[in-house]
Length: 556
Image 1 (cartoon, one colour):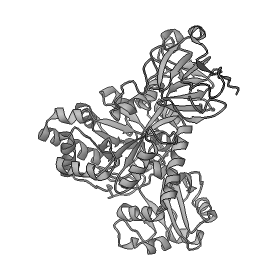
Image 2 (tube, one colour; image 1 turned 30 degrees about the vertical axis):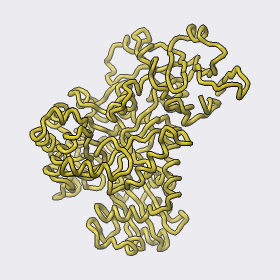
Image 3 (cartoon, one colour; image 1 turned 45 degrees about the horizontal axis):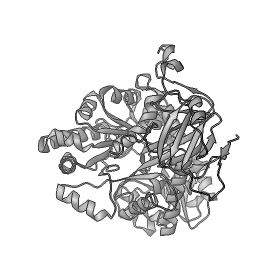
Image 4 (tube, helix red, strand yellow; image 1 turned 90 degrees about the vertical axis):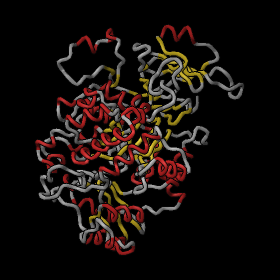
């Protein structure tokens, strides 16, 4: 598609800082009918109509003809694992393997002394089981191999890797090569024991990939079991405002439990880089796919098994109280309903200890929160806890024949990911991918929320878009309240999209037609239920171009 860029002055004559985008559509509540936007360095200076843009244009400006493209605030992924994503992008992708044998063939074809794979899901295979260590060993011809399940909470490892790293002595080891818990953490670290240069390449790869998908920021959910302070510091350095390469901003969290305010201070001081909170992937439980999410009642396909508990009510209480005392965000990975019971009781006790006002002011967050009944949702709202949810989980594993129903049975599966209930109760909600568990694909997330498998849990595309943009900045306590919006004075953090159709999409088809009419002055978004997804043409954060394609400028 043609993009006309006009630079009226000879190169090098003087620095250009004004860029006028016009002849498109701008998603802005300041002017819902805007077709043009003026950017002055790192700030949006103006949004408005085509007529006004023509009057505004002068020789100081670089002109970008959008040719019908859409400009929106950039996306924020509120739960991601950046280094892990980069490593996954460079390893064997097993997510599309239709059978167990096909997955093994992919591992067999890989080169290298250690074979890394990711993304397998046995519930999608006819065999309905993972491959075994013996099968993996034959496929990779005796090499060390590690193949992570799609949820990253378990993996199958080859005998060579298990023997080299003493996995048989670790909790979570099984003789068939399927590892969870400590055995899995050890295996993952061993398999990913790359050089510093290799990890740096993985980080950059992931961040460039995110930029090309329209993300301006990603919340990194680091924790001792899945990362290190050094990795977190390296990510922060890569994405600092003065870094040589313009990359999406990393919003860093560190998931380490503490028992007191003094211990929290010590942990923060020892990290070597500032973080936004002691939150993120601090596990209360595991995942449904790996049978490690903690349930009130046993799994439907594993009678007598209720999952794994990694933290007690007392530990959760201590952590929340300590962080609240410091005004610091705390949080946990919470999936099962029994895990949510622990989290909610910890909130209640922490509020008794330090006062509910301090708990509310700290802005705590729970990750995933897939199983929450009405009582839990009310408690989350009362304590002002943000839930960071992943709508694509429902799109991928919801429905009568998919993983949720297999693990829990149809009745319990129908209660998962209660997104609309969270919104209705006033619980702050932000969206993420949990990449590499699901891809960095923000419009797929918007569509999943709009088309939730349970009709009563569907929300509008606009609400979902805000959950994946402005709400991400709010959850991170961004200093600038205008982040995630496009209007005069807002940061120049946006993405440009080639789209097929613009419209208002709502969750309830009975909604009156006037609400989708331009005269309602509701900003338009891409139709997300079409075969052709929006294509990111440019991503800009604080005036720095992170990604540019199709002739759009690489600098502003």
